[in-house]
Length: 365
Ligand SMILES: Cc1ncc(COP(=O)(O)O)c(C=O)c1O
Image 1 (tube, rainbow, N blue to C red):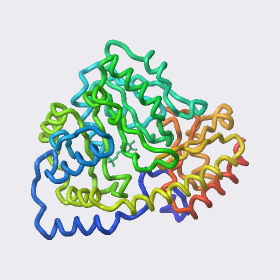
Image 2: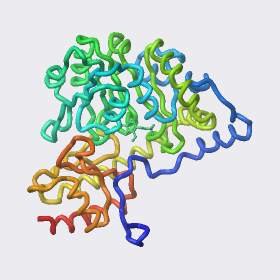
Image 3: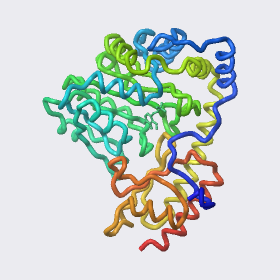
Image 4: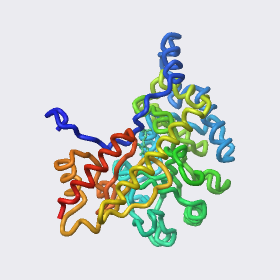
């Protein structure tokens, strides 16, 4: 539509609209000029693995050694490695819906079977531990936890996380904890699963990366932190798939992790203001139910009241045609009847996008 000259506003992308901070770019340029352009160890350069281990230890209390860290081409590859290692054919993995759709596909690519436990807006998209317990079978191998969440922005409170990990301990499950949005929390604080004790750390594969925190989505650098034997297996596995993530990117990521946090704080404050703006505007659309999400950069609207006999995909198509606004239908994330809008867009675009949605929805009957 844009190619036809239409002014489409997009709230579909899962990436910050900011540029990567200058300091990080400079570190990458330096790495290139200094010839740091060769293969590195598959799990990453020692300095980066040390910096990640130090960060996780400092933030969670998990005493992580550098050999427990494996860097990859994005958190996506770290997750892919994880499922390939943990799952045999037919092993079940609990996914807490609405969830980031990649989990399902990656579990299936590893021969696993996703078992979905759903939460709705009435639950504020927080998983119910009793329902999780009820979903466990002798084939359950792992549970995936993602807080703050893509697509709902929900931040799982510490008490609920504690109950979820207790279930994992009781049933001898792996905990795959995707914390890629850990620095984008607006109310309260992020709780890492890894801060919940040694019993939990022994079964945790912590996933994170620099994409969202430092506006580095295109650089491709994520990592897993795991017990040593799992990390070693991930490194061996990756060795035969892609080897190391880009050497230049690793130096950029190292600079990001060493950087003073003021740049990240400024981005978070801007996202915070945009969250309030978009949620306020969407809540004014009759039949759109939305609460303030605690983190990430997604607004998740429950549009059930407006569906009638139609679906969220039809609303998304209608808004694209009528309002020239792009967003993602919730059914993509097993959040049927909902709509996901990323507010990684300028305040001006948010105001205009919301205005267009408000107008168009008057014609949706
Ligand atoms: C929940 C979640 N995990 C992981 C990722 C992947 O991040 P990366 O860019 O590091 O591969 C994303 C990206 O959208 C995400 O939303």
